[in-house]
Length: 164
Image (cartoon, rainbow, N blue to C red; front, side):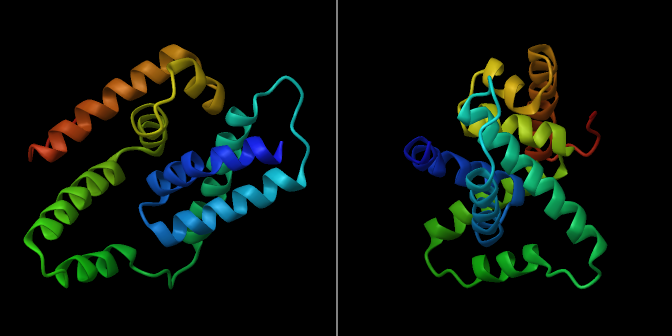
């Protein structure tokens, strides 16, 4: 199992980043996920991939809820904006702005749509695999993905009125 888990680490890290929007938080989430995965046995009739992504998602939900309670949470977006502002190369700034726009647009999505978009579009999972990870029907995955893509497109094109 540890070898299989080692192969999943890059994908889990990308997924963690897509949930958190910050590489430091993503690495913390990945570490928490791996600790939980290694401390508990794999449930019967569940693939390691689906279980690992589900544990990562659940860890993120736990952390997200804890951050909402804390009054003195760091303003990650302002720190990232300052970091982007300090870059000197035009190409790096352009890429960072584009990434920030996409990241900001993803932050506007309800978390169900964001995690679905991340699993299918970023991780390249099939609808069936994403359905297994999120424990929802494949039709729900397709519906969430369609709504997420429309909303991201509208946000990136500057349209204010967007249906969820």
